[in-house]
Image (cartoon, rainbow, N blue to C red; front, side, top):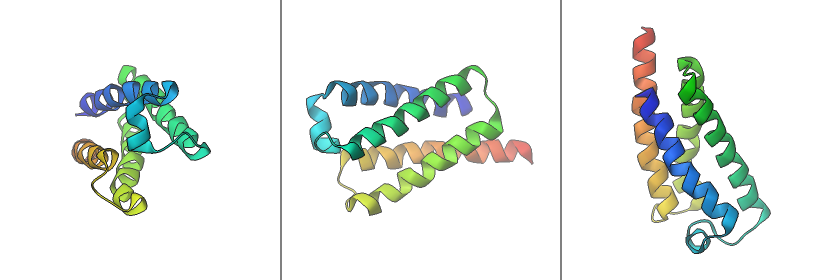
Length: 112
């Protein structure tokens, strides 16, 4: 499950970060126009991507759990901060949060 969650992060974030960096057309509908806030979000996404790649090569369960828990919290709160569940980013966040929650559960079960 650890490798699945980290691979999921990488598989999602490489194209998303690339699209945000290049200003791909779909990003306007999903993230709004280029702005400082969107740049900050890109920075956060890049940090999650870099850490996910590092942990994929050297998975430390406690570090993976910390990364995934932060992601779960921000992903689950996005419907409230965005004000809708209909946004495609919100929907994908909730699906990914479910996968990450299962991974965190397996990490904690292994510690018991």
